[in-house]
Length: 273
Image 1 (cartoon, helix red, strand yellow):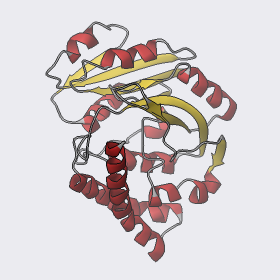
Image 2 (cartoon, one colour):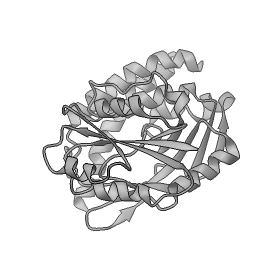
Image 3 (cartoon, helix red, strand yellow):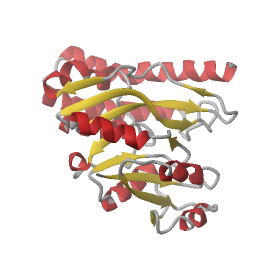
Image 4 (cartoon, one colour):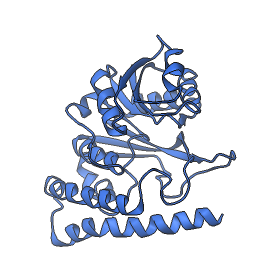
């Protein structure tokens, strides 16, 4: 079993070694590690070159994570694909856990949980995650999978799933979105899938290095704009899912509003803490 792991890397000299080392400590499958250097101006490329030939390094002009991930997909040769951000890292035995789940279920998508890791070393697990082991077949998607794209973000992240590579053929990340581009990618991925497994294991560590409302590099207004684009891109899927209707369309377009207010509240709460 071979798993391609695609990592977009931009000016991440402080974190990329931790990210890569978390992969080299894994067991259970052959890893095809593809790092796309997104025009870094610091020492990122030098560090990446020090890991050759254990990893594949591709350098592109700085174009953003969507373009970097698309570039990585071109070179992926694994049976399965995962995405990992350069300042994040996998938990110990993450790959072995995923391999074990796949061997038991033969699922197209395996969704796992993540922990938030703060600069002071504190870690927390976000409550808005699936916390039980579930096997979901295609016939149940319109009740147990697709509603999460209509009213939430639980399924948006591409960094907390392992997908069959065949499932992603022809898929690309939107280049004109600073945020929520992974949600658009996930829309197509979950629509194509026939079986999905949700597991409670915390396999991904998401580093919280930003601060304030614009910590991720996008303002609240930009995030609202991208979430509205996501809503527009969701509408055509409602027919594919057999869920098209006035109420569901209303819920889709209300999603950006509720997410924006929720983001503001959570940011203010975090800054107070």
